Image (tube, rainbow, N blue to C red):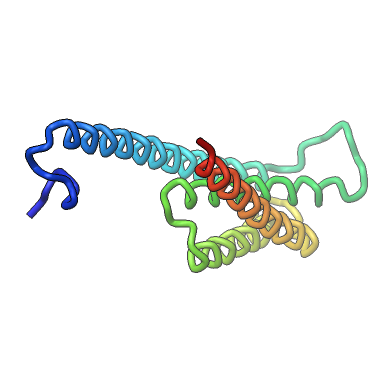
Length: 163
């Protein structure tokens, strides 16, 4: 049976019940905001991934800058951002476990491979080094997101000890 108050709280203590209900409401609001942010990041991740596929399958568009290797940096940054968005979605929906991170990494690396392999269909050239740049970007994005989560946790735990 559901009990709206803590078992340690006397049911007749009205002020304690109000405090428990207030803290539960605040906690619920924080959880809802966190979940909403996670879902928002998931939607942004999906839209970003779709736009990434479209951009990488467009016919060659003339660019102003022709620097050797610049496209590898673009692949690195694009897939790093994609990984960061996905990691943010996992984090804010409380699904940032090792198993999910491994699955995510495999999925994004496979996504990059499929993206490269389907480019010749659209008169683009598939390059192994582009896929390597995608993979390194994914790994960098996953590691950077993990570092941000770790630092955020350290900051939060140090603030709990303050008066």
